Image (cartoon, helix red, strand yellow):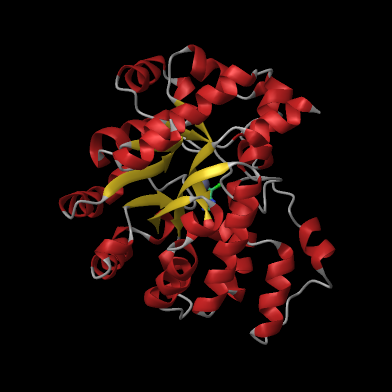
Length: 326
Ligand code: ES4
Ligand code: ZN
């Protein structure tokens, strides 16, 4: 239908995509074969059949297991190339891409291997796919602040290869405030700051992300709706939320898309952006998320274009490229 093509055609900027979450089952099997790894699934369809989640942790278990097939720089290059091809087909023009360095270094894959592999793809993304890209390194909050601090030391040896840092993985019991020192050091190094908060965790974690860490964007942030004062703060200071509608449904943050808080956030004047999170696991890329909110929440073409414009505003783009996308 024409509705479908609008959602896919609108030029988009994506600000919340974990590259390891773009690992499609076909590539998982190809890389397992190449690397001599035996998977506990008969095939692609059986693996895809496991993509049924009760909460964030049940997803993370599969996510961290899946990425075990990523070993060489070439594996990371193929992963990123696959993402770029699918994103380009859905109208993406700029992407600020998360990766989880500790999820690789802790299983013996060097940070340099990860960065070399991703960069071999992303350094020519604009030329090959029309998508400008940046990398954001996320700390795994459930591994604690000391390990994060050591990871930051290592990342700072590659300071010029990333634009910023984030905070992800299991949220409950791991408040942003625990990472105050790490984020302060990153800020002093000129890195941009974002953090997942208010995905499963409470509105208080969003306050901590803002007031203790000083983040410039909040990833997810949907639980902010529980706290009217927080919603006012987000709206007043135009602090962007990177909302991931299909992710929230798949991880049971909300019963179905029709109950998603996105319309209430928009009505309250919050700068909301639409993103895919882990597109291979959650039923689609960013265009599929646009299409889903169009169909289920009734956002029209003008509203979809406004979400896309919000993402350009919320991005860390240099002004020359920003103007091209507005
Ligand atoms: C994630 Cl959906 C989500 N939440 C928190 N951490 C993550 N890492 C990858 N996907
Ligand atoms: Zn995420």
